[in-house]
Length: 213
Length: 84
Image (tube, rainbow over all chains, first blue to last red):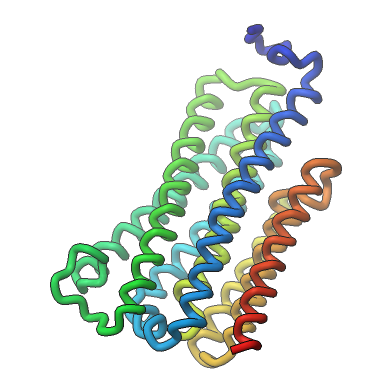
């Protein structure tokens, strides 16, 4: 396989062709992610319609203030990733790195807030499987909490991957290992992933925390 | 996308977030308004940040796929509540 800064990887004959293939692969992957989280959101709504009392009991115990802060953090990190994409020019590498590290730090802060939220929920006995005397009385409330933890933990893993990708890009740009077409393609793909992770949270947040409070 | 446009989209996203939180706090019965605001945020992200408006071919196809999936969820939810 040819690995060169000024030539596309085999079997591609042009950078535009390689970028188009990368885009297709990324959007296919994102479609899979959207289906998976879409199904989880649908299950959450199904619970809501089938067991409104239990879900209302569970939702009342969630820390929606922290979740609102988290939504703000993710939306801001998405803005910074978009700005990083616009700053991908030879003369503005420092600005690009600043945007990248800013977005990564905000995503890391999101994870820290989520950790705090889980800690509070653990202390309150809401964490499924860890509490002997759960304050939730209805079985459907505990069922909804299980779904809440699965959905948010799965999303948290995606944010963790985004943090890793952000750091990887930052180091690549800081050490001048990423140049030209290769840099543009990788930055664009990571940005696409970042925005989808953000988009999923934008739907998870009202579904789990806001509706029926 | 220009930085100015990115900031405008960001302002729209924050505005919709404020709508969601305010409705949840002061008009708790208006759940559909909360979900409409969330769908608006998702659309803003999809069209502007994910760049659906400037792409053709596969990208546009998958964009439509996401939108249709959103639509399937909405139909399911509304259909469920209407037939209960």
